[in-house]
Every structure is written in structure tokens, then in C-alpha cells.
Image (cartoon, rainbow, N blue to C red; front, side, top):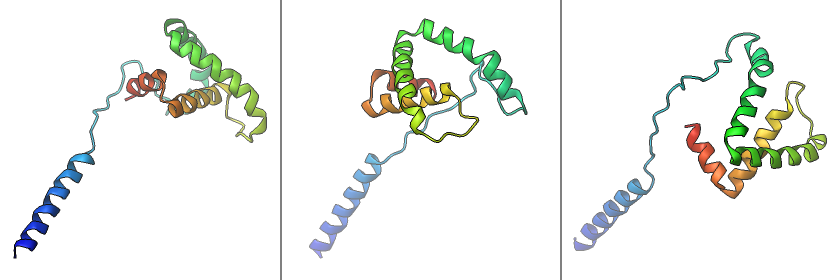
Length: 120
């Protein structure tokens, strides 16, 4: 009888510990005031031509870390893009952004943490 009670208490304690360890933290997401809505037909192409280059220049000018990471990723992207089969709509800035994020995420750099917090 005592052994069963001990086993039950042990299982309950283990369950409580596991529940505490694996708790999911919820984050409230909201729409940024200046977010682009690219769901309109043909809007994404115009946005990428008209706004994105200037926005990227402004962001790099005001964030040295982004500028450094982007320049490093740009060099890596140029070296590796010729070895890939990419969709026709895939543009260099997409590859540079993915290269930057993947490299920074792998190394868990300050840029990765700042970027991840900014997009939540």
C-alpha cells in the first residue's frame, strides 16, 4: 500500500515538473502601424520596386548591426546563388535576407535576438 502511494506521489510530482518545464509562452501579436499589406493583386511588385529599396537603405543607415550583417550575407549570397536552382520570382534581396537570418540564427548572434524580438 505504501509503495503504491509513493509511486502515485512520484508520478504526480513528475507530471507537475514536466508541465512546468514544457509550458508554452504566449506572445501577443499585433499589426504594426506601418506594415505593408501585400495581399492586393499586383501590389507586391510595385511595393518592392517603389518602397523596399529605400526602406532597406534607411534601415541600414540607422542600424549599423543590420548594415554589417547584410553586407556579409550579400557576399555569401553572391558566392552561393549560382549553385542553386531558384524560382524566377526569387530576387537577390530575398536570398540575402535568408542567408543573413540563417547564418545569424545558427550562431545565435545579437542580430538574431534583436531581429526575432522585432518581428514578434
